[in-house]
Length: 609
Image (cartoon, rainbow, N blue to C red):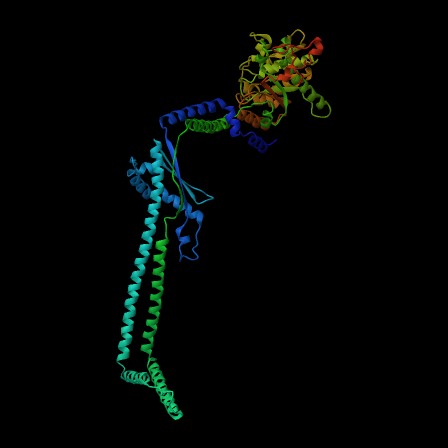
């Protein structure tokens, strides 16, 4: 798997908020309890009462008699009115109203707006809820109702002021138009009075009209000739009047006169329209309201619940704890199960080895001293896995004998795993050589033969000062076969320089010809640089990681192994939690002993994995 694939597995291993909270559950719980206590203290010292009044609002312009086709958005109107309820103007008026109550309530405008008042506009109705919190129930009820009343008064005053301003503007426009009309009519009269011919025609028309008014028709007893004469004289007067009117009309076709007549007619029409609008406004002013169509005053006040404060504090503490736990978990992700290292290493699990203390084992070599234990069975799984891979090599895959066992960092139980795997392989009839290549600790040598190290070792063999037979020590354990140990020795050169000598390859080749399996205990690859030289010379590598081990360091180890190129056999998951099923069935040693192996706390046998 290349580096890109490793990044993909890294994303899969990213912790969740829930997982981080569980990993640091004691921190989260502690913060939650602490904040719950703060909530209890706050609720106890700041007990308050809450009263709620409700009002239903409707835009008054919708119901005006002469407001036809008004484009209104009810939701927007309700939201805007809620903002007005929460305004400083309403708060100041409410404070004045509350001060006149019996008994009076004193409230500061800033307190009303910042702490006492809460306004909520419903999203699916025209209701506005006015909630007020105070130290007493009476104060909460009085102030909630005062705010509702103040809103209505402010609304009515604003509507009255709006209508009054509109009427004043209309009156001003009407006065101006009237003045213009009078001027035009006077100009028309002046123009007409200066025309001598028109005056003569008007005098003749007046005479003709007077004759028509004074004309006496014939009586019903008159003769036909008299009736005919009367009709003829009447027609003559009418014809004269029509002729004079037509002459006057022709006189009015003068351009100046016609222009004044048009201005007069236009001003008369505009004046009529303005007077109509003014009359409509006066009617709307009489019909207008504050916009409140429903009011439900506050009648009771509910005390604040300390339990709510405690619950809110507990939840807040939990949220803060989770927020702290998440970056902690990201920065220090640790293995919580035996399958998780596979995502970082890209190799399979060979065996999960339980913590020896869970089985109450006091030895570092359970394969020899506690063969019926679950731990011993786990190391036998490691030996079997190596044998299976060697058999596959014999079936056409590259053969191997030398296996380096390494880890990312110290304290993973790597050396103990090497020793127990060696004895498990020896029990299977293999000639096994274990190489203590950790020149600093030499812990493998101490576990197998005690604190007195052999005179010769790996360093002497590489430098050519001794042979393989002289450098190795046979470790005979009763019932566990034979294992040869090649200790570190006493090098004259630094370990890195020593392992860079050409003779190292010959040494690896020589012991590969004499033993069935060579297990090399290499130092942690991220702590000691020369560990990479050992891995490069080996045929295969086994990684030992442990429960609770840091994920990022294991990922770094994977990068190192990819660069070296030595194939992985798999990984050993050390210090794994002892699962119940491990102790239910006898392991492979049951057939040897003819009796089930005892578990750590009862007569149950270790599980066969």
